[in-house]
Length: 537
Ligand SMILES: CC(=O)N[C@@H]1[C@@H](O)[C@H](O)[C@@H](COP(=O)(O)O)O[C@@H]1O
Image (cartoon, rainbow, N blue to C red; front, side, top):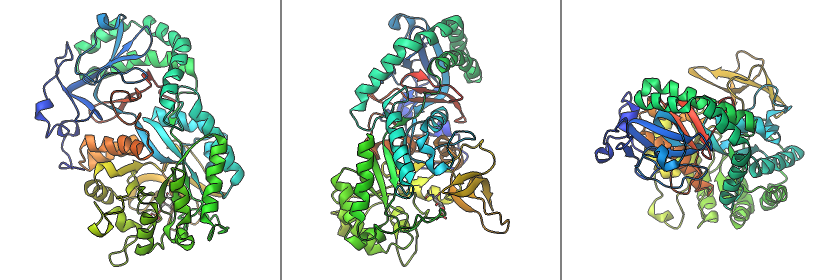
C-alpha cells in the first residue's frame, strides 16, 4: 500500500501516478476525467456524476465508471444522456464514487431499543444493524458471532435470523455466490413494485431542474443535487421501509476454539480442547441447518495444536477460511503449524494485535501480521491475509500506518469490530456485563468499553462504535494512504477473502453498490443495487 505525505489533498494524490488518466472533466458533457486502475474506484478530476432514471429510480450512469443499475453492466467513460436512457434523469454529483464498503467482522451497530437484551445476541435481530450499516456506507457484511457455543440458543437464533436476512429484501445478501442472479431478481421485484412510487416522487420533484442546476454548478452545489436525491430517497424509504440493509455475505464464527477471550468474559467450558474438530463441526452444522454459510472461523493455534490442528483441517474440508486469533500464548511453531495444516488453503488473521502478541524474540501472531511475505522455507504455505480494526483506537494510528504500508492491499482488510452505534446512550449488556461507549486515556476516539464502575481501573475495550467509512477517512485524510488503497482494503480485499467477487468493486457484473463522497470524503449518498439507500437506514 502506498502512502503520501500526510496533509496532501487526498482527492488529488490519488492521481499522483496516473497523469495519463487525469484529463479534466467537461462540466457539460461529463467527458474526460479518469477511472481508477481496475475499476475499484471511480473518480474524476472535478466531479463524479451519477445519473438516476426518474422512471425506474435506478442509476443509469456513473460518469466515467459506466452504467450501474442493480448490477453494473458496463464500465466506460461515456456519459449517459436522456436520449440514450429514454427517460428524464436526475443527477447526483460528488467528488468521488467508491464501491460500497465490505465489513468482514462486525458484531452489529446496535442502538437503544433495538430489541436485544444483550448485544452479544444482536444478530438475532439483524435488521436495525443492517440498515444502519448500509446507511453508513457499509453495504456488505460478514456478521461476527462471538464464541458461538457460549450461548448456543442465541447463536442458533442469530444464524436463522441472518439466513433470513441474507435471503430477502433489497439488502438481501447471499450466503453463496449463486446469490448474484437471485439478487438481480430480488432487485427486479422491488423495482416492479415500490420503486415506481419512488419514481413518481422523483417526477414530482422537478428533477429536470435539479439535474440542470447540478450540471451547471460545481461541487459547492453538491448539496443541491443531494436534495434532489433526497426526494428519491424519501420515496424509496417509504416504499422499502426498514429493509434497505447491508448484504449478508455469510458469517464469521469468532470461536469456539479460542485460547483467550480478550476483554470479554471467558466463555469457559474447554470441552473442545482435545476435540476441536467436533466443536468446529457443531457450529458449521448449525449454520448449514439454518441456511447460511460460515465463511470465516477464528481459531487459536495454541488450542488447536493440542488436537494436531484437527479444527483447522475440519474448516478447510468444509470450505471455511481458518482465521488465527484470540490467542495470546501461541508460539511461533504453533503458528507455522496452523498455516501448514491449512495449506494449500490460505489462513487469515483475526483482528491483528488485538488479543494477540508481538514480541521481538518470541514471535507470535502479531509478528506474522507485520510480515509482507513468508520466507523461502515456507514457500509451500500461502501468505495469510489479515484483518485489523480501523477505528484508530484498537490500534494506534501509527500501527495502522505500519500495517497499511507493509502489507500489500491485497492481503489486508480493515474491519470495524463494531458493536454499538455511536449514538447509543447508557449501558448495554454484553456477554452479561455492562458496556457503554467510552474513552481510553490518551485517545480521542470513542469505543465500546466494559463499564467497571471503578473509575481508577483501566478501561477494557470490548469493540468499536465506528463504521468502515470512518476508517477510509482516517487512512486517507490523516495517515496519507492513497484513496485507491484505502478503498481496496475496506471493500475489495475483504470481499475477495470471503469469495464475494460481486461486491466491493466498481466493475462490470458487480452489484451496483456505490458511495458518493465529497472532497473531504464525507458521505453524500449510498446506493445499493442501483437504488438510493434511505439516509436514516
Ligand atoms: C469480540 C472481541 O474479541 N473483541 C476484542 C476485545 O475482546 C479486546 O479486549 C479488544 C482489545 O484487545 P487488546 O487489549 O488485546 O488490544 O479487541 C477486541 O475488541
